Amino acid sequence: MINPNTPTQLPSKVKLYWLTKILLLLLPFLFFPPAFLILVIFLGLPVSLYLLLYYNSFTFIIEDTKITINSGVVIKRSKSIPFNIIQNVENVRGIFHRIFGLSNVNIWTSSPEQIKAYKGSTVHKPDGSLDLLIDDGEWLKNFILAKRSPSGLA
Image 1 (cartoon, one colour):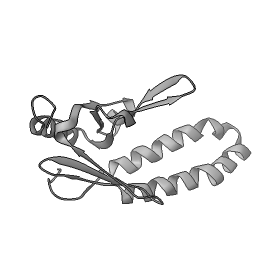
Image 2 (spheres, one colour):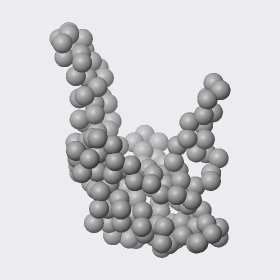
Image 3 (spheres, rainbow, N blue to C red):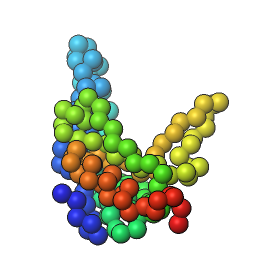
Image 4 (cartoon, one colour):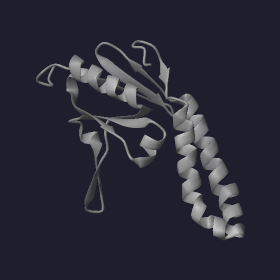
């Protein structure tokens, strides 16, 4: 359960979800034992360690007028997103999210930072993204949409 005005960490299922994704990426190399061992030692363990440190440093705070997302292992980031500029909140549940009972909550605004242009193509990224339990994701979506102003403007 998410408590407003309190720093909240991601659910513990997120750690298992991230580590499973790493294991699945390394799985094809299991048929080549030397390559698998090298990949696990030089890629799997450092990435897993980094994700665990990232998980422990990731918090978010839901206030009456904004959500603040704090993250980072080496470089600490804090991003506050006022509810009145949020244009859309979506819950995405891929196959692995559903297996672990999670939902990816994406928060979209009209910020130009969401659009990254690279070599003639564009990639759209949300201003904020959280992996939460399905019920918490739905609650957060409904909370944000209820708090923002009807026109989306201040």
